[in-house]
Amino acid sequence: MHCLPAVAVLLILGLLCGCVDTATVHEWCYNGDVCGPSAWITKPFGSCNGTRQSPIDISTDRAQTDQNLSQFSFSDYEDKHIMKEIVNTRRTVKVILNDSVEITGGGLQDSYHAIEFHLHWGNLHSVPGSEHKMDGKHFPMELHIVHFKKHYNYTLAMADPTGIAVLGFLIEATDDKDTPLSWKLLTSKLDDISHNVTSAHLNLSLSLDDLLSGVNRSKFYRYPGSLTTPPCQESVLWTIFEEKIHVSKDLIDLFAKRLVHYPKAAVNITNIYRPVQPLNSRTILASPGTKAGPLLTTGNVGGAPRLSVPSTWLLVVTTAGLSFLR
Image (cartoon, rainbow, N blue to C red):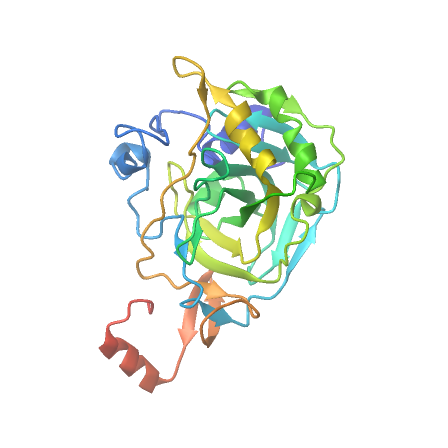
């Protein structure tokens, strides 16, 4: 993406998190029968009626442990000056990152460079706000760090079923009003973007590692999925981490209290998450050390796991009618 003009970069970022309306992306919303998630499965909204849609409910006891899901390598996640701009898109808050931020490993077959991160939340900390569930449980917020395959632009990333890698972190609410300081620093900028489609330059001394403090990033779940907003393109390898980020209740509440958009009158930005989608024939893989099911030997080809099991197992599984084998 480094070779694209600035206008094209903004368009790409907007489309990725559903922040730009164009002729190819129908006007959509999070609430309402006409433009809400129940309507996204219709043709004008893209690929939202596909078979590998996101988010999902991650059932940890049904996930299959995969030894190939090694630890990630994170490049420039420790850099305290990689956050360039914070934006109220009217549908979320996103932070645009320097393109030096990269991830490798973690069972991914390629390097991926970071584009932005954004958040999903409900209406204050006491109600659901995360997109993914874990073992049937919603959480107050969810953080998504979005990466494109290295050297890919938007068009290439969307056309490749493994073109986008998103790291998802579920956020739990705590009673401690003083921690974490990193999130206190980030939310201090919300007043600068309180109105819709506004942005502010970031001069914070803040890194991605700071925001993810305390999370063991060697424990995670992996599945092939989609963008969670229109056009819902099925181009995403999802990584959802088992351990949660802990953020104080008062800081979580600031997102629903401080941010507004103006469809006709000032409306607080709340309940910005897509409901979970059917798993269908997909398998959820788990890195070693997670709360997962039995160990499987897998070989990742193009990001799609293939299971290696004895033929007698295959006969039993087929007879039982289980759907996770492709």
